[in-house]
Image 1 (cartoon, rainbow, N blue to C red):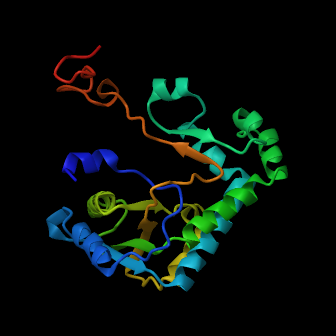
Image 2 (image 1 turned 135 degrees about the vertical axis):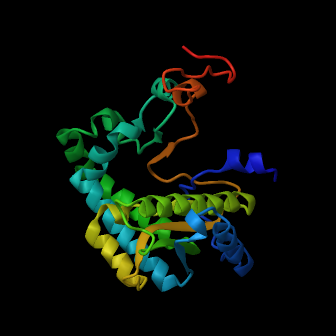
Length: 267
């Protein structure tokens, strides 16, 4: 696959993976390409845990599902991330960012505009939406053949200092290398984010992975090979739109946006 095609085809995998284990060759390749990322003074602050033990994966899945249920029942998720949700094609075309929630259970669709209100939250809880989402989340993680935990060396990761910024910047580059590699290998990848939203649940994952004091657990991803036909979860979204150049690129100063046909001045 040509490099630019890989970049354009990179996606987050919201649906299930094939049950096939990720080969040792591909696991090694993923960490090798991560190691090729740039880092401040070649500090290489990243550390990784590859988890393919079923007991570990199922425990992370349990924690993730419980986190999802709590976030949904309390309404925390909707309130925290409301600015990113889009509910119409018109809004997507105008904003060209965020996620378009285009798949909902039939019983919830009439309330999709009200899910951020107290009434809407009560209706969703009564209909069992948090339970459904939590079980979907648990099953997706549990059925993943591989988890990748990303950690930073605390001698480099010092929040509030430049070294802390540099280490996070390098970690992002390393993860992007992994993400692009999964595209080339016919694999998918998704951020297991819900436990991070609940501090005590994140601590459970740290303990499960035996994270030592000198490392900071930054993220967990689920990986696997993607089927040709992809089944969408109960509630799903798309995020394929990207902002036009005039919405995020400037020429010489921030006062002059470029035109959407790069090379001309915008207005």
